[in-house]
Length: 153
Image 1 (cartoon, rainbow, N blue to C red):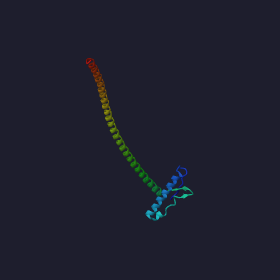
Image 2: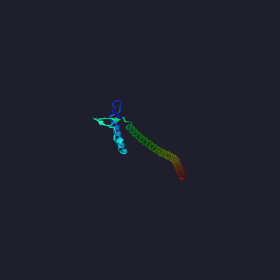
Image 3: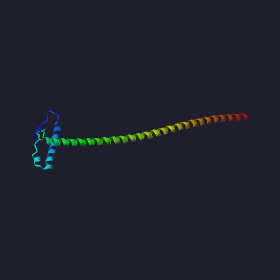
C-alpha cells in the first residue's frame, strides 16, 4: 500500500522536495537491482516528478530506506565535522604554541637589547667622564704652560 506525498503545506522547498524524491528513486532503484526478488520488481510508482511537482513515497519500506540513507548521510557529516573540528583545534593549538614560542624568544631578545642599551648608556657616561677629564687636563696644561712662560721670562 503506497501513497504519494506532495508537499505544499509543510514548508519544504521545491528544491529539497526534488532532492528527497531523487534520493528515494535512487534508493528504490538500487534496492530493486540488488535483491532481484519478484516483490522488488513490483515497486510502487511512488516518486515522480509531474509538471515540476516532486512527490515522495509514503511506502514504509521506501521511507525506511530513505531514513536509513539520511541517517548514514548525517553520520558521515557528523564524522566529517568532528574530524574538521579536531583538525582545526590541532592547527590552532600548533599556531598558539608557535606564537607563544616566538613571543618568548622576542621577549628574551628585547631583554638582551635592553641590557645592551644599558651597557651603551654606561659606556657613553664613561666617555663623557673621559672627555671632562681631558678638558680638565687641557686646562691644567694651559695653566702650567702659562706659569712656565711667567717663570721663564
